[in-house]
Amino acid sequence: MLFRRPTILLVFLGAVAFAQSPPPASSFEAASVRPSQHEVGPDYNNQITYSPAGFNGKNVTLKRLIAEAWNCQLNQVSGPPWLDHNEYDIAARAFEGATREQMQPMLRALLVDRFGLKQHSESKLMRVYELEIVKNGPKIKPVQDASASSSGPGLRFRGGMRQFADLLAIQFTIPAPENPGVPVKAGGPAIPVLDKTGLQGIYDFSVELPPELGTDIFTAWKRALEDQLGLKIESRMDHVAVVVVDDATRIPAAN
Image 1 (tube, rainbow, N blue to C red):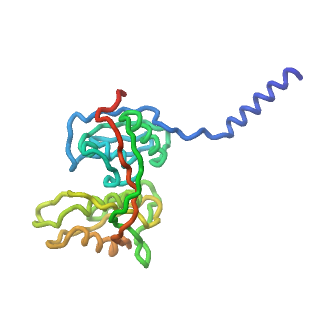
Image 2 (image 1 turned 60 degrees about the horizontal axis):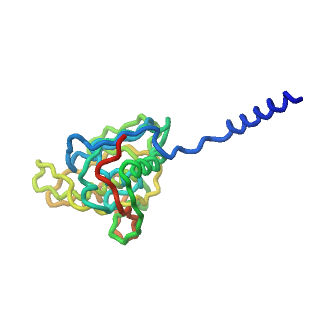
Image 3 (image 1 turned 60 degrees about the vertical axis):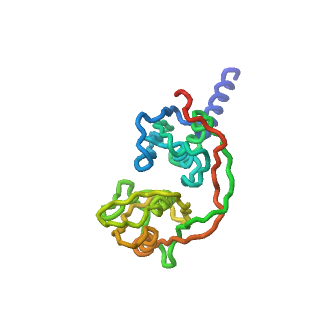
């Protein structure tokens, strides 16, 4: 009996340890953060990708990283001007199968560790656009097959509605074209677009926005949203969460 009791106890403890799921990771397994060797400017920077292996950013600003970490848009991040100018390359490895939502707290911890980021949140009353569903319901459905891809003409989008709201915030800053043959670029302060659709999942669709002289991009998108997607955009005043940067260093800590 003296030899059996320890054996039984070890088996019991092993069963308990096996039954418990490991706590969620609070940081990336490994990460490299360096100033970009060549800055490319606001028209080409902030290239971010999520994958099952981790998080990668090329020529990404600290402002964009903060927006990703706190799940908000660029104009919901307040701080010194350099946050939106200095560019960095980042490669971070997460545990296998980590989702975007699971990587966000890891990214927060990384920004605190490498940039000495100190921030606080405030609620600010400001003008916003709210993305909603029209009365008759949406004309789009989430993709069932992860490999499915739309191939229609126009502007291609693939992602969740929160990411679509981010895209619209940038699109609405594009000025009306003066010459249909000359492309125009986004510019100026963006107004937050809040996702109020309640739609879940990943969507894959294309939107046709033929250039029209004298028609601003907001009007073109408003018509396209309702006619092609079954969505609408409304302008309102609302309290919006803002991330205020109290302190951060321009040069990240050594990897």
